[in-house]
Image 1 (cartoon, rainbow over the protein chains, first blue to last red):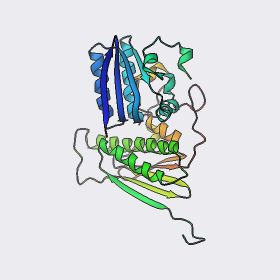
Image 2 (cartoon, each protein chain N blue to C red; image 1 turned 30 degrees about the horizontal axis):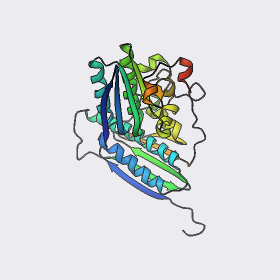
Image 3 (tube, rainbow over the protein chains, first blue to last red; image 1 turned 90 degrees about the horizontal axis):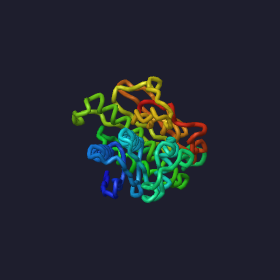
Image 4 (cartoon, one colour; image 1 turned 45 degrees about the vertical axis):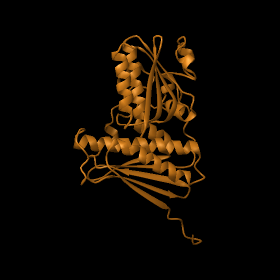
Length: 120
Length: 176
């Protein structure tokens, strides 16, 4: 199945626009992209999921590993997502409390939320 | 249908080679099946696609692990079987692999998803997700693998946002 990946740089942030379906067949490409960014010392990463039609636990696992890699370097890792079907997967796994999930790119790259604000 | 005779149900079977690319095919099929049933709304259809994706992924990974991750699919090998039965307003999906089997009781216990230690584990969310989405889940051991049987009703009152509340997924199982 199709996965579209596009990376743009905005100041210290790298924005990864993802489109299509993130599953066991396509997640390796996203994983490689996130590893490549960290290897290039890009430690502030936004993954924009607005054009994602489907994500399962394999995709969530890749995002968890991305978050872990970035945190190791003191960076920030945010997600942009407003699609209810995608948000539900984060919600029922409890990962909304783990990731900084924002409705817009500007908020994802904005000031860090306090812990109180992260949880819905 | 003859009055007085219980519906036997529509059965759809799909054989899948154990390759990652076929998981999207399994999702397409279950989505199309559910779309024909007005009892299942768009959200419940999304639940089914997700659960089927998780179960197929586990089946494929079990078979890939059994044959060696870099080995191609043996054309003679028995395929993964997905069997869907629609009857009495519910859908049962059974996915059978030949990956040697596993015992759900042996799954590694992971930290809570909100624990910083949870970041050390990428996997382990698949089976807890299916547990949340399906109305019934069971693992049946076969001679050479596992059959995962999931049953879905049109609504699942049990699925609620669980962040910081009851029914959190962690500690979760290790497969997935």
